[in-house]
Image (cartoon, rainbow, N blue to C red):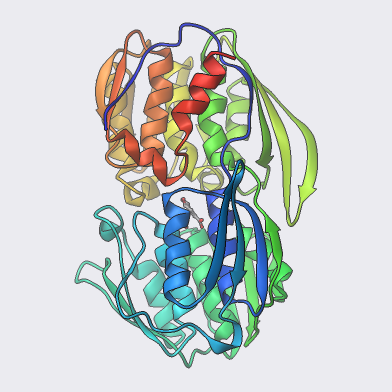
Length: 434
Ligand code: S3P
């Protein structure tokens, strides 16, 4: 589907709760499936990626009662607990979801089942050895394509704990190893080069697991341990909020409130960068929500943003926000350099290439300097025909560009927003008429 985004004819005004956090939703569903008893989950994201995780745990024998509501899905999850999962007769389709595929590998590694994981075209291009190699050292067996991609055949069971030092900061890999570690004998310890999102470490204790954190970059579990049912309410997703934050900063006269957004410090790196760029926003009413912190974001139009340098240690806490930050950088005065963002090449699409090519198509100045992404502003964005490359975050970033371009921006493959934010355009329209 092609979407045409016209330049905003007026400001964005009003208040929105963006959809629930994708990372937290995946984990709540998966941990409930592993647990003994019935977990109650509220405000779980209702979007394609989390639906992939829900279908996967159902295929593996968890039973779910699902009821949709205004803030997402309410789920009662009857976990497989001590019985363990059943081997499904057909491959599990992880769709577009890297989190589903990689976390499931860690789950399946712990049980004596044989199971095949497949994904869509994009997921079938993404690297899986980063997770299968350390899991193999713990005793799991994997067959991957020759390129180290899906489809994957996983045969689990008989794990022993291991010490892992990851070459790349990755919450998906870390989480897979910790989940496998719960089923392994001995200690599984994971150290990353920089802190990645920590939802797994925060949520596991609610399910009765003992997790040892050695800040800033090491976490361990002593296995075997089993999980028991829990209650989780999922806050709004800061990564989804980021698109509306930048839209409000760039569209003259805007002032919006984004309610109930997760303020987990491993996710809010984009706010620190926007603050340095001079953005006018406030974080209000900060409160606890289970193991996470949430608050409301008040964002106002900011006439002049300026460029900044994003350092390598900041990148894991904003990796999913680089596409939308790059749009802000293109309109900002001066140079913005995102250092060491090579991981963008192996996301849902090659986001590095997509940002450079698409900004150029809109007349902006962006280039690669090895693994650094350099954007030079300020540019007046021009009308263009862009491809989402089937990538939800590119589709939404380009839509925000369209709101401030000199003419319409057309985006092919816009339906990809269904992966994380199916009602994105409805929320933008509501704020435009607010
Ligand atoms: C995620 C971790 C990040 C992020 C992805 C979701 C998660 O990936 O980019 O969108 O839920 O754990 P990496 O684990 O590759 O850093």
